[in-house]
Image 1 (cartoon, rainbow, N blue to C red):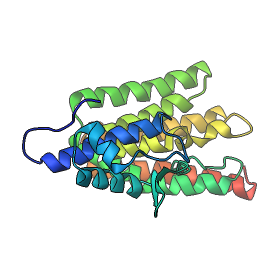
Image 2 (cartoon, rainbow, N blue to C red):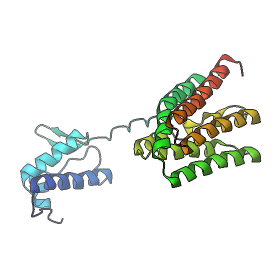
Image 3 (tube, one colour):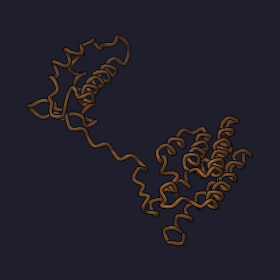
Length: 238
């Protein structure tokens, strides 16, 4: 293989990172499988043109990531990959109204602040996108189409207008779960959708007018209103 030794500063750190990266790629690509034994330190050092100290540190990095396990007197062995952690917000049970209510409660905390920040920070282009997404919801209502995708796009546009990428990442994490009415057993009534659209309009108008506190309250009212509607379903009122 190509000699990895660089000629500049931070040489040791760079070599450790490069060797551990090469070994990691071999494990991920199944060139080395669970139960296989890594080559000896001397062999790895010769292969990559590095010292055995670098090799030991590279193997320690792999061990810290749960990829390998040193066994006294036997060598270093590849481990079975750990199960991937559950992706956040993917365990929403739409058959349980209580699960939906929990998510809306979290959204109210995050998205109310997002609306307030969007009112302060949004650019003209972001304002235009918010209005476009808002009008798309109205077009879907008028055409009798599902508003779920358009609704989610509007909330994502507002998150994007905060110019804080963490809000957008949050919306991306919760994904379609953000708009749970798509999973209701019966389509929402037109009156329900019109009410949602009116609530959106108050949010969008406040953001356009740079009225931060009004935007925060409008988003809070919108999401807490959704929570109340789903609680009514939980009680069997709707």
